[in-house]
Length: 116
Image (tube, rainbow, N blue to C red; front, side, top):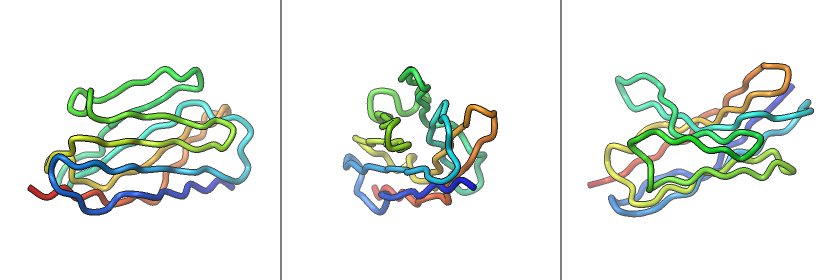
């Protein structure tokens, strides 16, 4: 069994910063990609950023230059530093990991609200 525990998030004014973290535990042998997704009310879940086991990163165009994803492979933890936040960044943020066996797991979600 694999558990993902997210922390961070909250309420911030536009232009502010927040940091998210997601720690995976349980029956984990090898974590491949780790990523952050978000879902705003009435919208589909979308990829925000991902980082491979080789530390290659990908970002949604809307967050490039503002968000930074990183990982601590030894701790099975992925981070998302969010700067210059905008009201459009308001969403529930979910972390996701993919294991070597191809199975993926999701965190419980954490609310990020950016006020204008």
